[in-house]
Amino acid sequence: MTVLRLLTAMALALAPVPAALAQSGPGEAQVIVPGSMLAQEAPEVHAIVDAMGLYDILQIMSVEQTDAAAQLEGDMFPDRGGAAWQAVAASINSAERLVRDFESALPVEEFDPATIADLTEFFTSDTGRRIAAGEVAARRAFLDPGVEERANEIVAAMRAEGDPRLDSISRFIEANSLVERNVQGALNSNFAFFLGLSDGEAFAVEMPEDLMIAEVWGQEAEIRATTIDWLFAFLVTAYSDLSQAEIDAYTALSQTEAGRVLNRALFSAFDVVFEEVSYELGYDAGIFIAGEET
Image (cartoon, rainbow, N blue to C red; front, side, top):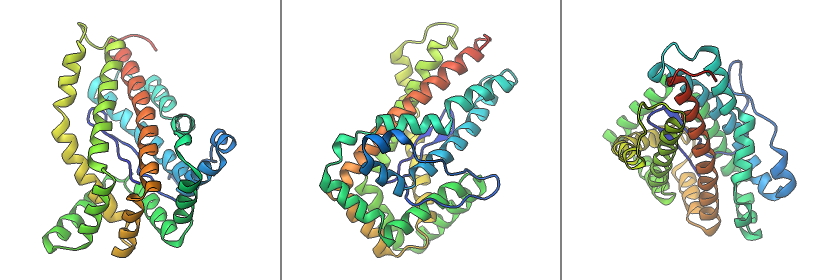
């Protein structure tokens, strides 16, 4: 199930959920060892998360968000963060922290034996592994903005040609409610960021929560449009080596009870992780904006 989080204020993107660990080259995100807490407390769920390559994706997310935090400094408090801000952002977005928080937030109690069996069968199958490898590779490739630009051009050409693969990808997006879930998550994360800014005293006068909500909702149309574009560009890239039948098989899994449990659980966990990260980044950014020492 693909999860994307876009924070307009910070240019952050949250992970798709893939499978299978991919090899990393020089300068690329390195796979981290699967977390031990989940392995101890819910080993069968841990095995699914591991098979899906989420630990690899969390590492890539750490790189994305640390880079985005550097852009945040340039936008909100240029030349006032320096090494101190870099250290703060790296700590908040560390892969180890993301893994720990994700594992803590994942509602493992929702994975009953039948769900575990169905998910394990799919994600250890040839189709599951190929879906996973494509998602990991595409996510890593999107660290280069030029790759995403080219993917958008490919999607535009496919639309112009009436490529039927886009129909399969549309059904996948709809089956998983990817647009609505990601937009909702992004709005919640942006609100958490505003709360952090306020608590970090970024504003000369106290900003009422209703004004924060209005500011966040003012981003909804932009976030929705960006989310749709990103999803199609990413999924076209990730599934370029799959047949329509294989994409449809993934959609079919999404429509089963096991698929719905997985989708709910992953979005729930990522929502917790990124609202916490967003608040902390906002809070520390507020301190820098206010000109205080960290």
